[in-house]
Length: 600
View 1 (cartoon, helix red, strand yellow):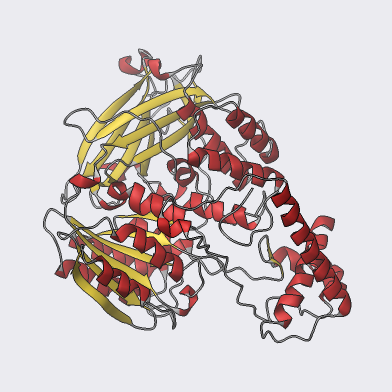
View 2 (cartoon, rainbow, N blue to C red):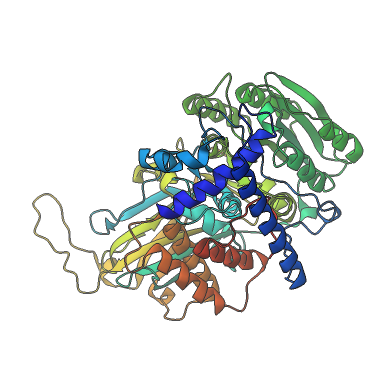
């Protein structure tokens, strides 16, 4: 608490100075406050000078393109101060102790804005999966998920100064953290749509358990082989989108993407705020200047009628529909729907209906403070969609350019995974992550139940914590069921079987594939992909303060992760970045958080 109070004094002193000059309803700060603020500023300038003198390596998280090279940065938006949600500037320092005693700081602390700021970001609650007995509950069923939003949103929060214990509940989704990265998985065999790789080895956070990592891979596609595309950009231009890391970042992101289309593609732009509008309808993909001009003319203002925007976007997509082509709506928003259709139930009904048109959905999240991850996740999950969070131009390039075929070209929809465990080999199991994607066992073969969408070259990684059976005796003497393990199970040559249900992009009935996971998949010396995936999973548990970190504390887990990463020699730029983020979180050494690009 002492540390928090000190942070509060500094934060409130700075806030007082900022508020006095930005039109907030406040009196001028005291001389003491001005002196404190001046000292902080002097210290900051001195630190910057020292850093420059020492020749520290510059690390700029920008895309390798002309736009990024221009030095454009997307600074965190200034908070919309509300006199009901922050301490009055004058006398804030003197009142700090009293507010601390009242519990005010605990309720209104934000690691970036400091004390007294009310953050309205929304996330779905997550209840972690527990262990299930492989004899009584042998089936684990869930929808595939290729979303990556949780990781890039986590990165944004780390760069703002968030540390252990302060990440919003529900913001850390293990599967999205793990699936953000690329792994060397098996390519699908000829004539098949999925490749599967399985590895079983030690669990880094529970000595009594093993970890099974299942990697599912679809075949990659070159951009030159992409079908003709009908893309409708649905842009939120409401007042909340004026911040530089929202609408301006959207415009710059689209500039990276547009140059990848040609004359056979159709590009449309639909906007929504208080009302809706069609800014561009079916323009040829090679009309780059015309398309960019339409984007650059967009301005933010008004409320957010996202429901009507979605309806209009799908109408435009159907009007320009290309048979056997890519037909997709791409929504760019902070998810803050505040007029028209606003409830999650209404949104689910709307998007579930619209997806029947054969038009797919990509959800791109932007911004902070009022960001509704709940809305964006709902749209993606219910609309045959994928979901990414764009916090900087490098992430835009990754999602929209480098992974263009994965993001745009659907190769399988309603993908559902079911693992049947062999109780002769596995005593208990626990799926790590996918809490919001769980399905009942009977849903696996029910074509009315939604699965996930997978694009060309997409990867899905599923991680199970398993307790091996060894000498456990399952032959209980029960009256109403036979609990004996059959001959196949007792052969003890398979840990489990992975079954995949999926539909063709234009299909209505599921097809099925099976992949046995045999005893040969166990190893004492797993490869770096296995180790890295397990470290990312462990990190997510630490960030969430999971009760399933049995043998380590969250702090110890982060230390172990950094130690393991130090020993790896084949880290690409994204894995290197993960290492940096773990360092920042473990030491909270990146606390200045003034923009989305950092220098080291």
